[in-house]
Length: 388
Image 1 (tube, rainbow, N blue to C red):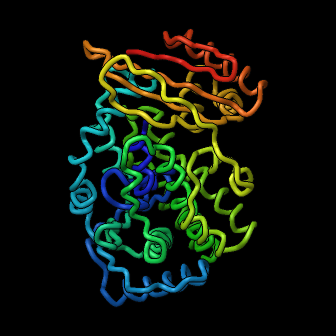
Image 2 (cartoon, one colour; image 1 turned 120 degrees about the vertical axis):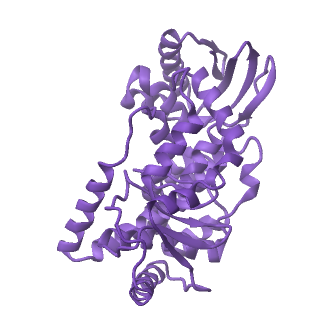
């Protein structure tokens, strides 16, 4: 579940988001990297080239890797940028509509919410730049080379450099049942870009850092969040929040070459991103049999620690939800069409310890009582079924 939503993570940098579902990698968004949208549609080529060269050199030094080829940069005004950003969105509509049905069954969005329309508006307003893994082009909204814009370039050029060395386009993650792998990879990809961007910002003068922050605040104020369910930025934002600490742990463990190794053999679950030490130690999730569907299967795969916490949070609160999901050991879920416009989601979870299992069971029962779901406890697992 949330494969398309999480994929939005690879491209949209909204207070932690991305645009993978729409065909790119690592988009910058208003909540996370805000800037005044310039009124001009382009800057002098020499100025752009000089800025790109400076930022490229910084990114290459920080990563300890050289760019293999020049990265084309396109500057577009607001309307042109939005059209380019969303040009392939319709291809993802059916998948995103399935995500909408699943989220409604879980009580995470209201029945009348059109998730596709919400994402179109949210992403169109929030993203200010993205790296396209198909064309290997970096696209930036506007052409004013402000401190914020240069920080955006550092983020997106990190994607470009990582793509040149390790190939960020992983179509195998688009296959069914690999939701968690896609989310974990997004955490690595965005975490690394956010880390390099933060280093670039730190290298700016104090006046430029202040200007970049002001630009962020100005752009953030222009993003219309009315009607955007809380779960959307939560899921899209996960790689941008949890990814940077994960990558910092890799650097502490073995420097830039350990980050490189992670791109070659990446993490596979959100638990890996949340707990990098466990992943570095070689932890693997427990294999759980797939739950039984009672109708046409719409989606299936691994639910994951991060999505479990997001599911519980509206009912039991953030800290309690994080605590209940901590100790996640493995799971499987299935979603099916229950007829009459209803969708059902069934998931089964294993936990690391008996105590963890008891804590999750208690949390799920509290959540289920509020959401009209049912909870089933077995000797070593606990599960739920939710239908709407």
